[in-house]
Image 1 (spheres, rainbow, N blue to C red):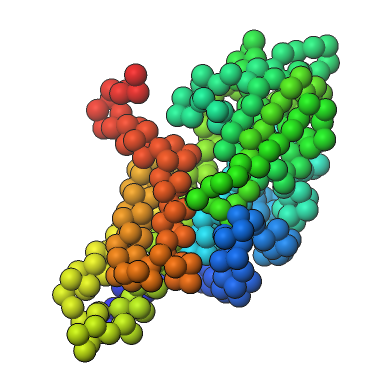
Image 2 (image 1 turned 90 degrees about the vertical axis):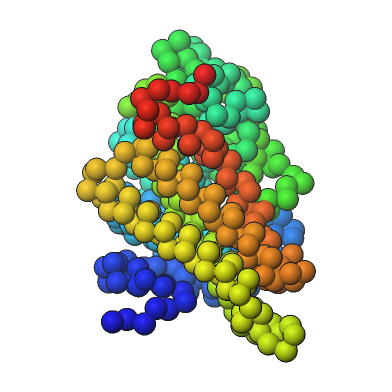
Length: 388
């Protein structure tokens, strides 16, 4: 019988294939070696280490579930494990990869033309081109079907007017997937950097997701050629399919943030002494550590099972809502509990926990708030929609 280990108490590692373990460990080493030494400075300065983007491409982390077009073609579980290790570093790191892969490359691959795929996917897989996803607006969040951005047909072009807000990668993107209302319903457009009337402005003074580029996009009579429309995208279902892919990665990613906080708190509790013994020897501290570890184990098993279902084509969007709802909430609670073990030291960037807490506060409400996902699951249980 295996002896329980503090970092993998029930040997979840045993449930993974050799490829999954090797890929996870490779990404973990990259994060530890290349990202962790610079994250504190970037978080304080509200910048992202852009020089790491080509390395992420070299590791095959962009578009890793896409077959062909120079993309890796991995499984959903493999992608989830990668998200977990990236967010063990910082939510901003996972978010860059998640947006590029799930919200830009996925819709191009799923809804795009062959010309669009060959133009963008190989370059994006290498990290040579960056994309963003424009759905949320200044006044439109949980009800994207009410978006105000409008695209009107004008000869062989489309003219788009509107704005998008809280857009990850917005100010560094070479292309934006912009969702807009039309006379024919909601459609997706590839709006390229430099198109007249298309501007971005980075959002400043954030206290969360500081090591991430977050922007507002402005579209003022932006003329987009017909070839830039996503031909297979139709209605609100299309952007929601993209969000479903991203939410799956989030449910994995936050387990990485929670695990990082747990590891820090456990190590600290074993070495910090009060009343002549390590604080890990006190019952209340052990109670906190056990609760954190238990929620991490439960969350990891949940997303691993959903990932296997997804790879078998048996995953429902309501499964992903359950995972996003539960895992983000429990990760945030766990991070707060871990912070309390460190006392005053817990607010220092040196120990990373408060940085994770601030990030998780955003993850709790982005790409579907905790409450919206709860109502999605509630509708699945009762058959009644409680959104209005």
